[in-house]
Length: 171
Image: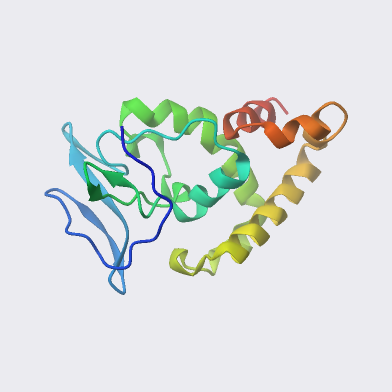
């Protein structure tokens, strides 16, 4: 299983054979990884972290995992918003993304698409991420108020991204 490190690389690490990616100003933002007869958006062995809250999932949605390490090598994962269909992921993680991450995050993204669209990934600092998260959450609150009212008012602070996705999908 890949170790997840939440840090930005300052220089592009050497790309493994079969890797195709995007590099800006010496910073590898992401790459494709060739293994198991295909090219994937994540390195071999990558697993989505478990028990991730919505705010941290939103950060990965916007910026990916630029400091992800796999086998001792920096193996950046693109912003999850750029994983446009399940075939970009190997079967081992496809279901987790499609069912537990993408439903609520893509719904939130619809609320801030214009706000986010003019900002490159390497310019998304903590302030930008927090502001976009708050705007997206306000939009979700308008769309699905039941997730923020009554018994959910306090419970939702402890929900994982998977719980958010399951509950938002039901409305």
